[in-house]
Image (cartoon, rainbow, N blue to C red; front, side, top):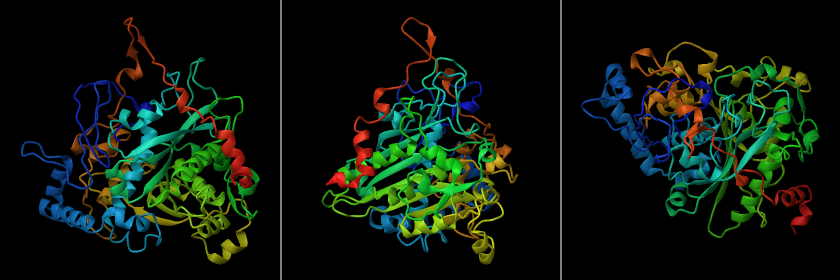
Length: 515
């Protein structure tokens, strides 16, 4: 997924179009107005020619020799062949808390972390950040064509529902709003989507099960939203969660974003929480008890989206939405990227008791992953945490952590810039080159390093990849049949809420009605 949000637009200077593929194989129709760099499948290294080597090839030759890099890629390829995802997906989803999979780095886990990271990246790529667009704050594409519009085919997933949240909460630096008076919605922002893997035999064979994926939008480079946080914990039970322990608490700003709604707005008249729970419930009821089929629920998000991923994964398990009519429990996993702390130590203990697995991918230099709870957190002495456990600003991370360091990559500038250290594309680049503690940085799949610079200025200058290179053609304007330039209509009825959402909400709050 090689697009970025349009708030970093630069003048368009080329009409050249190339294809790429990473986790999915892309296709560009004649109507596609976005340019992409070449990139390749994680199962094989990027193709190279004698005339023009990629920047990753040149650097490998300069740093430690192409033979070593190719040997490492060959080793990973052989490991993936011997241990396929369809046979090991439960371990990849955290059945054993990823014991023995991160050091050395398991190539199947790496591939899946990149794939789910790409799903989170799609939320940025599809979001309209442009304040001069009347659709600012919405998704630029309809849900039925989301992946195709991003230049992705054969993703193996279908988008089942879009997710929206009300912007009438105190996070002004997170939400995007149009400057125009006539807009698609004055009080809503698009927050992500729920997708489900399709019936294609190749998809089912590759994944080894059917997968429900929830992807949350976060923040790209603006980190001002951190200052907007109240840094105040409050009980989740006060926001409608079916939690028996009032001591289980989460950051109030995350809870507000997840649970607030605006009944006067068509898009946010149901909270993001209500939208995601009802859609997951629908999909679990449809697929959960199918004979001979396994099911998983995977939640992903970057930055603030990572906080929503943890919160919604917990909520799905707490509300029992991951339990089928026949009583089968569906595993719930959250993969987060550069995510902040979400709750207190009791929240951590509760999410572990429910069996929710969380793997946090972080850049060691990223300040977001160290917030909130800068002083009172899981790293403080246990005796102090026990004494301060009841305070409203005592936080604890959940799950397992995979720490990465951008200063280990020979492609990236060693500077510690807050926004670049938080960049999701940079994290995916670091994942591709990470093989374990103390091991050499070698791109395993040949993922194009140029993607790092599509929304940042992070690559070293001698690679000659311009910063913020991705741009929307003509700011999204198109010429109509009369020859006039207009902003085309974008919102479709099927991108809004399902007609049976009221019924599903009633069943959630009154489980006896399911019988």
